[in-house]
Image 1: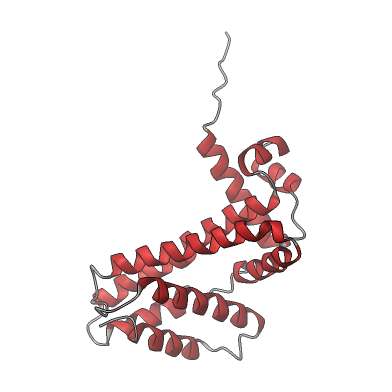
Image 2: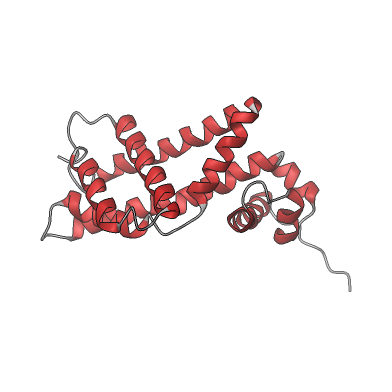
Length: 203
């Protein structure tokens, strides 16, 4: 009896490679990760990785975007839910508490982004890739803020691009500082900072 081997869908291959890349980068850092290691972890050939992503920088950008969507945008959505559900404190405070609890989990990705930024600084050809990554992340937060307006009132004159950039900067900066010196950036301080930012966003 002849069995027909089912070829995996390209989207499924990409998803598995990105997941494996995320694990490798998180464990080994950008410099310590190779395409061969990612391919082996995903169970594909190096050729499969290159045909889907072009090289390690593109692979990193895809893995970084996947992390951002799950961790940061997901945390913001959870914070919105908390703000909508809590009645004993202002929405900005409820959101700030949820963000402080969920965003700063000691993940290595903010530091990895800094490592990649150093690579970009030395290789100008990668600047467009880095720029596209950051623009995409900002666009995700803009959309998250737009959806937030359906649950909590936003300031009528709010510039969503500015607000998203401010939130993105806060999340990245605080995560890096917290990872490097957790005692210097206690959770209460993070929560207070988020609250000040959100009070300028919410009506």
